[in-house]
Amino acid sequence: MEQERAPKPLPLGDRLAEGPFPPHHSGCFGCGPANPASPRITFERRGDLVVGTFTMDDRHQGAPGVAHGGIVAAALDEASGSLLMPLQIPAVTVKLDVTFTAPARLHRELTLTSRLTAREGRKLYIDTALTDADTPIATSRAIFVEVGPEHFHQFGATPGELSSVGA
Image (tube, rainbow, N blue to C red; front, side):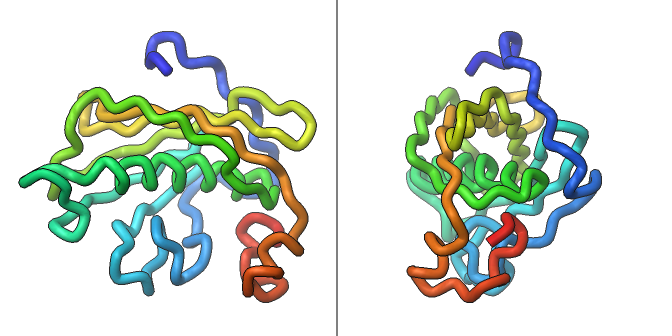
């Protein structure tokens, strides 16, 4: 995904107003305040975009001073999934294609920006970018597939526990 050719986002509807989101749930790896490994990404809706900010620390280190590529990919996946909150659609990642362009330095505020670029039946196509100020770090193209709430319940979520995405 090249920034200058990023497609116009599709509308996210009016189920969730502009502004900050609550965490998906307290134990969520990407945004959960009760998860000690979480980088505690905070998300907000800005029109038809979802924007997240976070800072990685030594728990997320790969090579000295930079984040492990796996946590960068996880942050992109988390941002893609956060786009489901304004839509109130329970869905799961079926494909995540990540392109790394620069190291993600630790102890710096990073920004994630996600947009819904297409929808075909149960499939949602989501593009996400990670930046450090004006420096592109990584991009992703994700495909999510809408599932019923029972998908999450079979693995231990209680009804209403994932109300952030309608499950």
